[in-house]
Image (cartoon, rainbow, N blue to C red; front, side, top):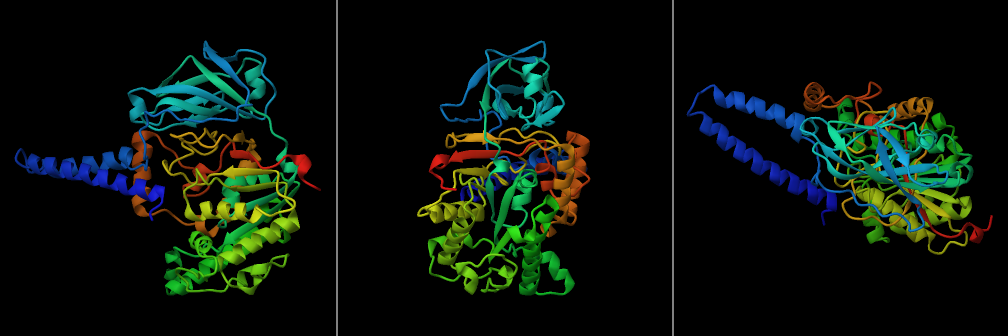
Amino acid sequence: MLNRKQCLLKRHRQQKRWGLGLFALLTLASAGVSLWLPPVLLLLGWIAHEAWLADHLFYSPKSDYQYRFPESTPQFQVRCIEGVLQVEGDWPNADTLILSWSINSSFWGWLRDPQVWLGEDRQDFERGARGVRYLNLSGQQQALREGRLKLSGRFCSLADTGTLYTFQNPDYTQQRLLIIAPHADDAELAAFGLYSRAKDVHILTLTQGEIEAKKYQRLGLDTAQAAQLKGRLRTWDSLAIPLWGGVPQQRCLQLGYYCLRLPAMLAEPDKVFGSLESGAQDTSLARRYNAYRLPGDTGQPTGHHLLADLKAILEQLRPQVVITPHPELDPHTDHIAATHALLQAMESLEYPPWTLLLYANHLHDNDRWPMGPADGGIALPPSLEPLPADGLWSPVLDPQTRHDKAQALAMQHDLQGKVSLKHQVRRWIQAVLTGRRWPITGENEFFRKAVRRHEVFWVRSLSPPQAHKL
């Protein structure tokens, strides 16, 4: 069965084919006017597509974002008076500040990405955006409290009033943390800033990430050999790169399961699921550097072993906080399955974690989120139906940490290399016509999306801390 994102992409492509078909008919009709007109129209149409129609945006930009937060979340009315935000009432100290505000794209906001400026921080939205959006003010509490935080829009107009939501969290970096990474690089994309400050953290990578290894076939390898090499390289990435953020190899675990196989493993836990491309069915080689003995060390990639591994790790490490993909927001099938497997493994634990911190490295509806250039803030992602009423924690990354995060991504083999010529041309057209910019740290889109002023986690409480025996 197709997942939601695949269904949305299929519908998007169908609509695009209808549009292209109509444009082709109009172009052919223009041949009756002049023979040179059709090729000119085709060229202009292609440029317009690359500049303004190439984004995978699977919802109307005129839709309101819809979020509901826990009922206990403090909220306050905010006014913008002469370009400065003023909060009504006495509001508490908080580490995470989210501002609900309505925006309305101007004419230019249909051609260029609408920008909302909060002091020196820029947060971008969809072209043609109109409706409620959720801005991230985390890290700007002092300026807001002192009446110095300016709000302005570019290529859009802004409402005069909005709502401020405040979240106060414990310092999770001082608790025992376990990061679940379905693939090498997921921990760095979502939580490098968090784990580089953490006092006690382990990183658990579930798969080798061996598929889509065509670039390694240039070395003269066949499909299986290329996938095996990529799996070995990304396994190494998962164990070695966290050291750049201060996490020693002994605190990094690799289970060696195979990419895109986790959902099937959970559905048929007795069955062996080898690699889709390399043909391998033995996970033991990927586990040889693990500091802990696990039930799945026999090497069989089955759902039973996956659940037993997770349970054994949770029992040995007793994490107070687990960082894992958001099962409602992140559409990657391995990411969804990773969190579902974690929840199953937690069911019979004597010492369950207190908290889940949920992250989204991908989205169903918008491939560009977080929108805008690198180093900007992260506004909340589009949510057209209310998500579970989770809290939020959005730690701020200083410039040095952002530089380090970019270099951690640059070490990842899957994020290296140049984008295709097609995408290079598209980026050049968008730079000229829409003003978009990409960072010089790397060409992969994640260098723009992940290296930001904030990291964002949805906070889901599991049990009261006093119930956790230390």
